[in-house]
Length: 356
Image (cartoon, rainbow, N blue to C red; front, side, top):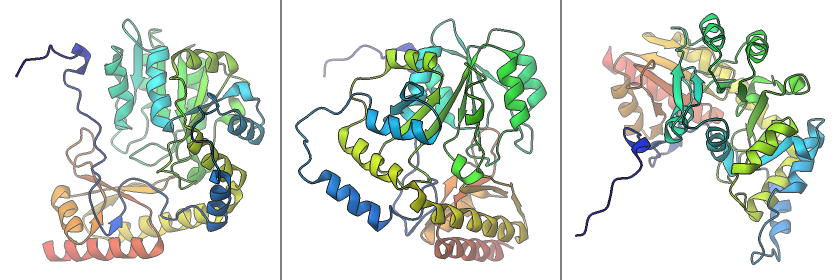
């Protein structure tokens, strides 16, 4: 067979993102909403798709949905940008503010895609690790930012996979410390009920990332969005792929956003069930559980990879981070329905009892 020349050098050492999607009875690994879109919203979606013009290109910027999001946040259309899931917008961040000669500040452990995107675009990565309890080392971050060479940073609030919100005062200090672009990834903010949105008018260097995948039950429909100053949105538009958000996704997300109040009971149940998981995991011998403001809970246990296998053998799929840097022997469980959570807790208790 004739050979092929090497791919780009930036790909050396890059490990493809693997969500470890495996068949299971209980899916508690991907931070999905355990409930589907409410039936009345599904009915509205079906009406919107009846006679749908599949042969026509979508509105390139999805302006109907942009207007809805803008109105709900007290902004204008120019402050909102849609993306093919939050993942596209994260990659666009690295394209827009990163690249050769540019520097990204990261606070691991956090979402691994941030660093991967930086390396793919030839951006220098500066990691400032979190403390042992996974709090941000705020003094270290601010000190590193003061050196003046950071072009952009991402702070996830609540942080994935560790669960806690970033401190509001720290975020303001970070924004004040530099003209670097600071993205606050609020993919899970509906479960923490805190947003940096009120500060957009004050900080041109603030950009907020959100998604429809979690609270709005649309993980199967790729839709994310940015909130930012118009000057920042204009820069993102320069690297955005044309027609990146298809018209079907726009129609579905528009129907969901119009009816977002119908998702509040489900969000409240997830918050309630998060408390159940935190309480019950905290009672289990040998388990160290970390507090969470999101729809997942991180915990540490000896021989975590074997515990993960035992759960999977019982039909329960959770996320194994036990061999990841800074997350040794850690597992993450998504908050499921009350029934799913009880199955998980029962299976884990059984495994721990057998091992003791």
